[in-house]
Amino acid sequence: MASDKQSKSLIPIKNNEVSVVKSSKSKDPLNISEKLQHFKSRDEVKKLLPDILGRVLARTWIDSDFREQFSIDPQKTLEFNGVYLPEDMYIEFQKPNSDRPKIVVYQQRPNSKFKLRVLYLQLVMMAGRWLLSFIKLSFLVIVFFALNIHSDDHMSDNDFYKKGISLYKSAKFSEAFIVFFNLSIKGDTNSQFNLSNMYSGGIGTTQDFSEALKWTWLCALGGEKRCYKKIESLKMNLDEKSLEKVSDSVEEILQKELYKNQDIQYALKLGFWYDRFSPIVDIEKAYIWYSVAVTGGLYKAMKVRDKVRKKIDNETIVKLQKEANNIYTKVKYFENNNGEIKWIIKFTGL
Image (tube, rainbow, N blue to C red; front, side):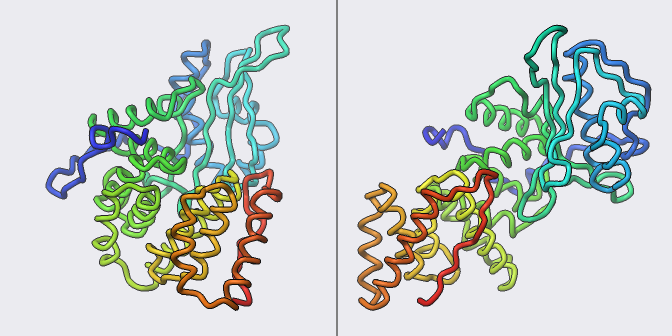
């Protein structure tokens, strides 16, 4: 997806070009189903159940009693609320007490040991807050992965991106936003560029200059030149405290991705961050991360590592090299199986 960026990316949004799409109204956003639902086929489940399960996730978030009932027996809880699945399907509520609870629908044929996942919905974390959309009476409905946006049909990232473009051009901005958000998490710079535009313009989400700057920084760190040009103008919309929070968020994201995926490219990005992008340039931290990148096999980082080394005294360099070695050892040998960082690296004694 790195090629042909100009033809695949959205044109930056201007205020006078924004279209408004009115959302559909519901009588009661917390009502699981407004009528009795007996699903008979897989197609019906795919088409109609995601909306119902989206309401279920929303209610589990604000109703602790309902969450407990649903955790114990999700199938009976649905039936109690008038929703019945086909006989060969069942539902699981996974990680109910985590920050990313998931509802999964499975299909298992009679006398078969194999189960097929039909669809799933999952809460999404973004910048430390739930990714949410406002609904009636200021309640919140959780944005979910419905089958028409994310399914078990193994859609490639490129096709998923094209779907996002199609949704955007059809003025389905909130759905396009979800597509670009999920691809942005995976590091796609085209999606990050589009997502930053949607945040800065308030398209498909509320206007948020902090989020716009965060994704613009991440996009630029991925080598997207169009994002370089947006950084300064977005920084002008933020106060010093907000700018610091966004900066901390970028650093945390880069470190999490490094440890979660053991992707040494993020070490190089951290080097660039402290060397060229961070509001507070720190050449010592830049040297550490450049060194980790080189040790991990990114020899193109040698030039920038040696360049910043010339600005650091010999006594400090010895300490930094030991720190870099410790970090690389942790990255290579101590990945957390849950995909979370057990510790945030602190630079001490420098």
